[in-house]
Length: 286
Image (tube, rainbow, N blue to C red):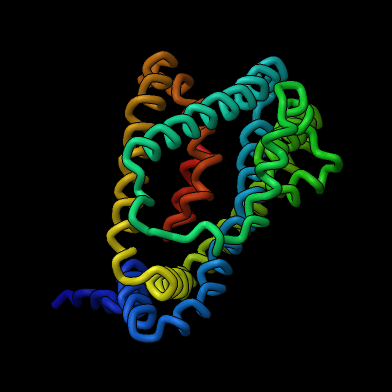
């Protein structure tokens, strides 16, 4: 008689672990608020681990994609289009987020005393916004050093370095192919690291939820749910309106017409890592 493969235990499923961790975090934050606030580093640490992998993944994905091309004219066109597309679509996404946030105001009701907040956390952004202009913004895309692009936290700098590297590799012939194979291997390593980090998602969710409830009370969960709903609403609007329009004008039925959308997805994927990074890598390569 054929044997059936035993099902996976429910407690090993990642999203169930996350839900359980959230529930425990709510209880800890509600009944032991001081302990909940002290658990904030768990959530911050998990977010920092995810952010740590964004630049390397974008670099490997873009470099491998451009380095695989042998038509130098096509490489140049794709490089320019990638920079323009990233800049333009990111700006539209920011505007949409600001508009939706202004209209729905998902943070309304927290009743946080502004004097208790750390002004230094946003001081660098405020100062940078005052000094920012069109020319300075363009010059800001150029990193001070090659490695500086990965340490400065500016994805446009990472994208510029990735395009130049991919362009250089595409001109090296057989040597470039070998280097590109190494880049592809590095990408697999980075996605493997992400897969390991994602397993810590329950710990991050536990710490973040315990801090939120401990610092702002159980009532803050309503605002948190509103914030999540606002995020998904904005994401759906962005995909349907912005990416849908781009795909329509580019000719989505033709594979070449979806290249820009795929480049955007490749750049955005690390920021919204799921539990299936290997599949994301395969999609980005295609």
